[in-house]
Image 1 (cartoon, rainbow, N blue to C red):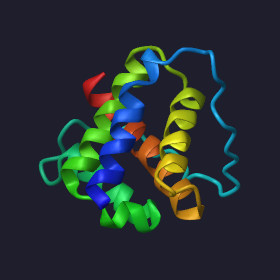
Image 2: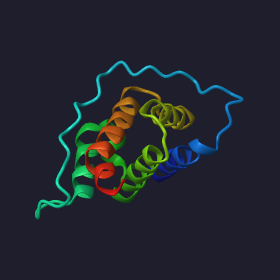
Image 3: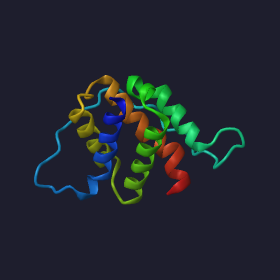
Length: 132
């Protein structure tokens, strides 16, 4: 079940560049403040890789969904988010795509908002600065 939900979110983020503007995305308001951005990490501190830091960050800050997702799904989502940033998508556009994926998978709740925020902040803090 959780793999299907995460896979759907990955697919939704990956397809954001292919969507047409014919139908507007639903508006989702996140009322909880996202965790503060972390300082840029070192590429490798000799103890923990940035990939592991990202996974740990999402698990700590991503609510229920962050804690149940497997590591490879989290890394795929993080990589897809970084590719979106590298492709010129704004944080708002990525947030809207994640919000739509959460709505489509009945995850549009407080834990879904925490999960999306943790994915974006974690990817920007640990993955995107290294690979993109």
